Image 1 (cartoon, rainbow, N blue to C red):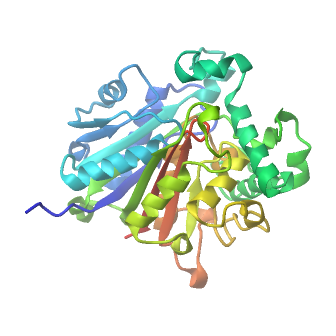
Image 2 (image 1 turned 45 degrees about the vertical axis):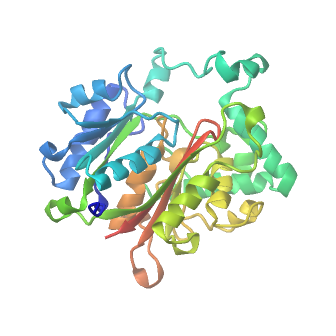
Image 3 (image 1 turned 90 degrees about the vertical axis):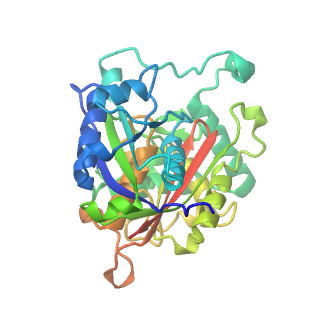
Length: 389
């Protein structure tokens, strides 16, 4: 008879220094976040036997493990863009539940802003001209233009307006205003979003994520370690992963993201529904990502995202607080932001979010949160359902 699967909890979370970090290396940010997450957990580093990392080094996570002084027996270097960390969380939770690892550290760090400022050579975002992408490269598609095309299709098909997309940015900034660590905190208006410089029609500057430095770490552990931890555990209730396309011509519907699949799987596994969720942390490199992901996760019907995001619904005091730290649009976005979604969700469920803390009716802390990451140009998705212990 097979042994029962172990329960898995997030027992430690932390961010490195974020925003404007001119002197640190990406490795240093990895180490800083890892040390802080271990300290947050109260566990000794000796319990960590798994490591998940991507986006740094030729042999990631081997190089990161060496830098951190770890010799894990379980590793993951899955790289699927911004959803990498939700996908890795699913992998790590499965490994811990099955007994292949006891405690897995997810860690990330990037100096994207500092590299640009110093004119240091960084990763090439042309994504190459071999394989499937060779058929689109000659037309000069940029990453942002692919998101812009998808947004335009949603506007054409469902009547979504520029004002509604701008509301996403306005409400993200309102949340950031209550986060002392956010890079941009000054309130903005819909008119200011619409009148900004055009980047890729229909996206003006404020429809697009900021560029920052920063890192983060999340420690997952088997349930038997929880009594030795320092904080309230946050349990992994469910997770789902999905991929869609890389070539735009192979994307069947520009108005449907792979979160429609990853979300369904996660909610079914968790045995909860969107109506049960108290807050959502959603990848927001562009305003349209938030809107369409809310639809695909089931918070509103397809095509109703525009109306759903109006009237302050996404703010900390709204009906469904979304991106409570200010998101990639205002707080920080050093590259693959999916790990930051998990950190913020855990802090909210623990009641550690300070002035931006979400409170439900009667002042109670939120119980259930969803973190949903998107990678590439809606190429991949990972969704995780979290529950306060």
